[in-house]
Image 1: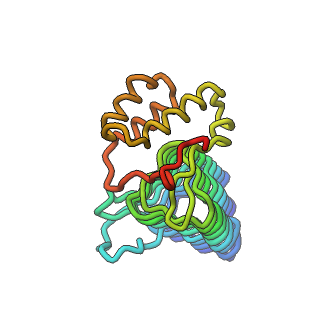
Image 2 (image 1 turned 90 degrees about the vertical axis):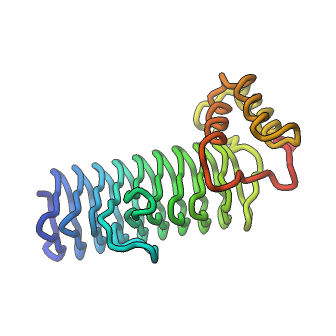
Length: 268
């Protein structure tokens, strides 16, 4: 058992690994499992069947693992699983899964959830994801590795945010955003590729140029979408970024793709 402040309440059954620190006025439920080195700074509430990975830090007034905000939820046993080395800032809320979404809400490792961010039931979040202040995910949202969700943005249920995508602040996202895409707006449209993100993740200039050409083909009026995607796979599939986009578009989804505003070509 770790270091627990005398004003904290830890229910019987809670599992605390070595090095856990629980600060003043925290409440930890009996089904909670806190991994090695987890820190609850103060006034944090962790409830339900919630697992938090090693070295994750949680700041005051975060609420994790309480009943999902879903009227269809019937009290079924479900989980919230948070990975390792995450930073969860003040007033963040995360809910466990529901029967309709596999009974699991899950985050990866090394993510940053800034003040007031919300992760709803049945979301799946990859590694190194950032949710800026007051960014909100509705139920069943998928956010892939290295994506960034700008402050005050809202993501519609069942939407997918691709690997390395960037969502501008105060955006409403109703449709799937391709990997490495840059989307923004009240009803968001694609603004091109996340060039800065691509450079930060080691993509070379020739790769980025190839991806820009692939972007223009993907959203052109030539042939059908399926034919354009097949052409991209055949002609440019050796480019990792293009391959990620092709796999994303070919995957099953209940949402349409987020489109460029006024059919804007990348680089214009």
